[in-house]
Amino acid sequence: MASPELHVVHSPPRRGFTDHALFGMAVFVFTEIMLFAGFISAYVIVRNAVMPGLWPPPDQPRLPFERTGLNTAALLASGVLVWTAHRAASRRGPAAARLPLSLGLALGALFVVLQGAEWVSLLRQGLTLESSQVGSFFYLIIGTHALHAVCALGLLAWCWAGLVAGNFRPARFGAVQLLWYFVVLVWPVLWLVVYR
Amino acid sequence: MTRLSTRLSLTSFARASTWGVVLVGLVPARAFACAVCGGGNPANRFAFFASTIALSLLPLGLFAAGFLWLRARGASEFVERDAARPALVDPTSRDNGEPHPPPVPAA
Image (cartoon, rainbow over all chains, first blue to last red; front, top):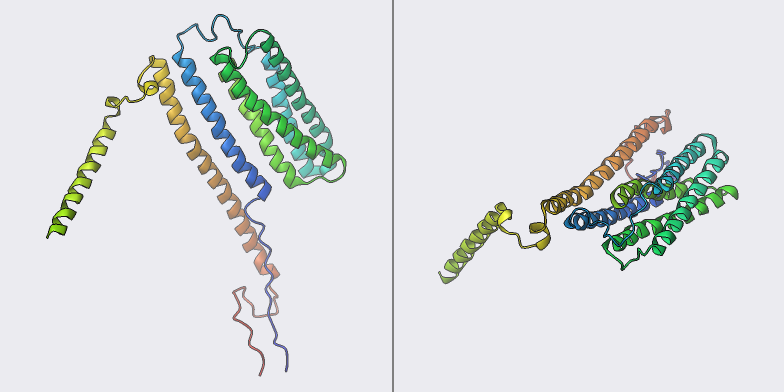
């Protein structure tokens, strides 16, 4: 019995719409955007309910808007450097991303350290979670952002370690990048709304 | 007959209720049930109104952006697949890229 002659048409494999890690991170970032939008909404409503000149209350310290500009610049520069690392990796290979990613990681860490120093200073001046509505909102909103920054920084460090060890994974880096861009881009909004 | 009249009265009640809800919805300024949205100073009321608009539109905007992004990626994938198809079909065969019928063993 002769075996049947089969015609096989090779079609390129489906690569899917997007990477699973990237898509999962995008869904997570979506929920985080809504979380921060809710925080900002509550803050703006409560702040506008206070009589003019009473925010912050007279016995509470004023939030250091100008001094935090340095932190903001460091974080924005970190975002630019991570984006540069992504471009370098996709155009010239993973080795080219090492320097910009290292610098971006260092600036991100600088932001977290400066924020920590600022918190210590504000706590010493009497601004606590229970001292006033200013303190409650400040530590809730900025603290949530700091938590995200620390987690995203840890993930960036994980990618950096993989890069140094020669085990760079673009899909993983893409997902972590998305979280870092969220941390970077939501910060100026918080800075302008909460600190001013 | 009783069942028919009951159904009619229920329909009338549902219709009246719907109109009532619509009419109440048309005069929200008369329904300040919330101390936040109805009270406070004008700045507070505007902040509440603007926040409501922003929180309503933000998820819709994000969904729309995500949908457009996925559609753009999907479209580019199909263009790539269609462009690659003729080159991968054996030119000596009579295959035109259409799905094949199940193979029939030779007798």
